[in-house]
Length: 101
Image (cartoon, rainbow, N blue to C red; front, top):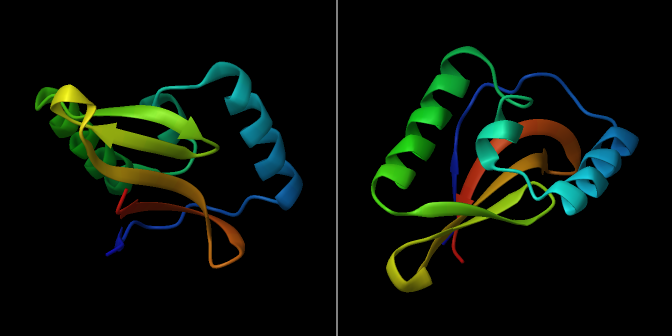
């Protein structure tokens, strides 16, 4: 089952900007905290950062998996969920989505 957490969308991203971002991530494999601030603002950013802090504080570590996608694992690398940022319904907008592994 995939659940989407609602956050205020902050602007749009062109297809070209999205592809450039993905190509850069392939080289740098960034932490989610470094990327999420480019997508969310205000309370949405604060809530998302609090969620990520909660995960890390409880030994559930988001690790970069692919473009705008982080896998969250727990003890012994047991999969918990995946966090996505970026494209929603074929529109390049900001969102945070948590889904099954």
